[in-house]
Length: 510
Ligand code: C2O
Ligand code: CU
Image 1 (cartoon, helix red, strand yellow):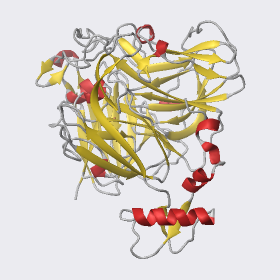
Image 2 (cartoon, rainbow, N blue to C red; image 1 turned 30 degrees about the horizontal axis):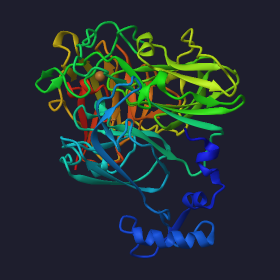
Image 3 (tube, helix red, strand yellow; image 1 turned 45 degrees about the vertical axis):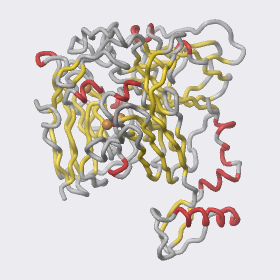
Image 4 (cartoon, helix red, strand yellow; image 1 turned 180 degrees about the vertical axis):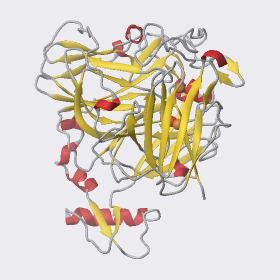
């Protein structure tokens, strides 16, 4: 656990001041991409000056040094806390991979080393990185072969809670994911302690996956009950239908790589304010989370700031993130847990313990107020111009067509119709879920505004990169085509649905 006071320096150390500042220069020949040597030199000069650097005429770049990371993907044996390790794949020998924490505006270089027996890539989920850095095999780069390396490089921003994961088929589900935090230059939130929680679904016995009887349908929504929406594979044994897998029955839920019940208690003190960065990295489960005895004040959705909204429960679709603040005013030992009984029984339950408190964690008795998209107000403004293009996407599949067939407007990727756009256009997409399963739709390379959650126009839309549609639900989203691809992936983040065909592309016309 990083605490704000201990871990972040919080503006009191010189290094951090340095990293926060920006330098304006206009000298000919100094371009950001080719300027690492220049950056280092300027950083030295900036330190002497102890403040913002000189302004020449308007070329702005960070005087921070390059932040470098290595992520080696390799098979490993991982024990989620049962005492028995099972085969998994991970970055840097662990699941989830190491936390990458950088500051807005910093240049980040991440070297991927592929120690896997298959080609791989890394996608920086939510970050609008340049196209060549987006990590989608075929669309943005050739997958990195076994033994190969690839250097990802981008400028971090905007600030927010993100995550990274392999974008090669089904690899996310083996454990190839990790948290990524971009801190703002100046933290506007006031809190004492921070905890990242990465939720994942896990198969303890990968050799005996049972097909999920509910995976093809059944009445289940975001608050699915016992046995609803479980699934998976981990390290083998899967059902192949044209290379597409059916969702198996998951038997465990992990938090930061271990069963939540095996996770170290989150230690707090009375009067503190705790910031939680919640990340749903699971392959196929919407996670409804609540902290017993406390309310959650949502401050960010998918890393984008929202007007603080206090609720009891947040729902996280696969790929979604929420930042919440919890006021620690109720001493005792409490559980942060899923409201889904099956998920909770399978491990989605982490103790939060006040200093001096004893005893086992008290759980949640009822759902309380569940935050919906329509409850939240965006803080970043939106473009109110008329859309240049409107697309209608109907999500369907499962049921009649079988558990491995998932469609957009009746077609399966790569036969789905791409969304054609021209740079600078405002694009409206109406999403409608005809199927029985929830679908978290994720757009690469862009944020979008949820202009009409549940089909009803929002005054101040929230900005997101992943939006969950429950059974028969409609959301209207809009984005500005400001990151020329040419091709960006747009897909359901249930990996079984994604590979079953529920995907399309946003294609820039050139
Ligand atoms: Cu989080 Cu296309 O991915
Ligand atoms: Cu889906």
